Amino acid sequence: MTNKEEAVEPSDAILQTAFFAVLFFLGSADQFFAFRAGAMNFRWGQALLFSMALYLFFRRKGWGGASNCFADLRQSKRGRMGFRTAAYALVSFIGLYAWSSLQSKYPMMGFKKLTWFVFNAGLSGALILAWPKKYFSSLRNGVFFGVGAVAGVILIDSIAVHVFGQSPWLGFAQQGYPYRGAYVFRAHAFYYEPCYASTMLVFAAMLAFVDSIQEKRSYLSWLNPGIWIAAAFLSGSRTGLLTLFVCGVGWFLIGIRKQMRNWLKASIGVVVVLALVMTAFGLTTGGRRYLNFLSGPMGLDGIVYRLERYQAARKAWSEGAKTLEVRENPYFKEQCQGFEEECKTWHAFTGDPTKDKMAMTSEGGRIQSWIDAWNDVQDSLFFGKGVGSMKDGRIEVRTLSMWLEILLESGLAGLLAFGIAWLAPWAAVILGYSVGKPKWVTWIVLGLPILAHGVFSMNMTSSFPRLDFWLLYFFGLRMYLENSKNQAGSVLAAP
Image 1 (cartoon, helix red, strand yellow):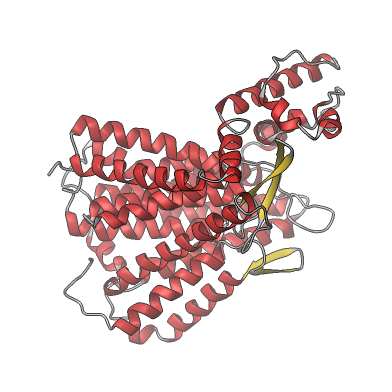
Image 2: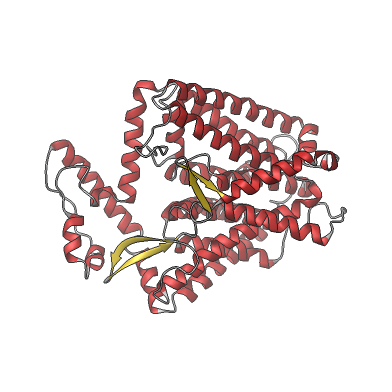
C-alpha cells in the first residue's frame, strides 16, 4: 500500500472511496443519470466533480500542507519538463481550437465543446493529481469500485437479456442484428452505446493489471481485470477487445522474452477468470446463443465479410453499378432466419450510398466517416473547420475517430498540440521508473496501455471531452507516479 507510514482514519477512507466510486460511475453515465439543457447533456457526475472542486477550493488552507504528487513533480527535472511541456501544448491547443471555432460557421458550438473539455479534463486532472498522497489508496479503490459497478451492470443485464429473456434489469441494451429467430441485444450500462463501455472497461483493466504487478498484490487482484474484460466482451463491441488484444499480446511476448514469472502468472490468472465467467454464462441456452453470435456474425469472419461488402459497395458506387460482387457468407443465413422480409430490405443494394444499409455497418460506417472527415478538412487542413451543428442545436458528430475529430475541428496545428499534451505526461512518468535512460522493456510494458488505447480505441470512438476518459487518464498517471516511487523501476524484473 502506498505511504503505509501515514495512518488514515477508516471513516475517511470509506467516505473517499465511496466518493470516487460514485464519481466515476456517474461520470460514465450518458443516459438516465444525466439531464439535457440547451441541447447539451449534463451528467450528474459533472455536478459531483464541481461540488468537490468548490469544497477543496474553500478548504485549501486545511489541505494545502497535505503531500500530493505535485511536490514530487517539482523535485524531478523530468517530471517538471514533461508536465511543463504538456501545459504549454495544452494552452496552445485551447488557443488553436478557439481560433478555429471563431472562423467556423457555428462558433458558439465550438466554444461549448471547448468549455466542456476544459471543465472535464481540467477539474479531473486537478482533483486526481492534487489528492493527498496518504489518501491515494482510497482514490484507487474508489475508481476500481466505480469501474466494477459499470462491469457489474453489464454482466447482470447480459444475464437478464440472454439467460432469462427479459429486458435489462438495471441499465440499457442496444438492439443489434437478428440472429436465429430473434434480435440480439448488447448491454452497455448507461453509456450511449457498447463501444464506449467496452473501451473504458479495457483501458481500466489494463491499468488494474499493471497495478497488480507493480504493487505485488494478492491473487484476488486478478479478479478485477478478468471480470472487467468479460463485461467488455459481453457488451459485444470489438473496439475495446482489439485494444486489449494488441496490448495483451505485447505484454505476453515481453513476459516470455524477459522470463518475468510474476507477469506471466498474472496474465494466466486473468485469462482463467475470464474463461470461468464466459463458461458460466455459456451454460444456459440463451448464453450459448449469444456467445455463438459474438464468435460468428460478430467474429473475425463476419467482420472480414462486412469489410469486403463495404469495399465492393464503394467500388460499385464509384462505377455507378447497382449490383455487388461479393462472396456468400453463411452467417447471414442464420441472421436472417425468421427475418427474411426484413433482410431483403437490409441486404438490398441500390447503388445509392445513403440507402444501402448493409454496406454501412459498424465497420463500413466508421471507415466512411474517416474518409468523409479527411476529405472535408482538405481545404482548411492547418487550422481546421470548427464544430458543426445539427438542426436541433446539438453538436454534430462528423467522424467516429477522436484524432480525426480534433483534426477536423482544430487542424494539424491543434492535433499536434493535443497529441503532445496527451503523451508528454506519460513519457515523463515512465522516465521516472529508472535512473538514466529507461530500458525498452519499461517503455513497452508501461506505455502499451495508453498507446493501445489511443491508437485503437480512440480511433473508433469520438468526443474527446468525455469525463470518464479523463478520469481514467489522470488516474493512470497518478497510479504510475505512486507505484514508481514505491518500486523504483524494479517491478519488471524477474523474481
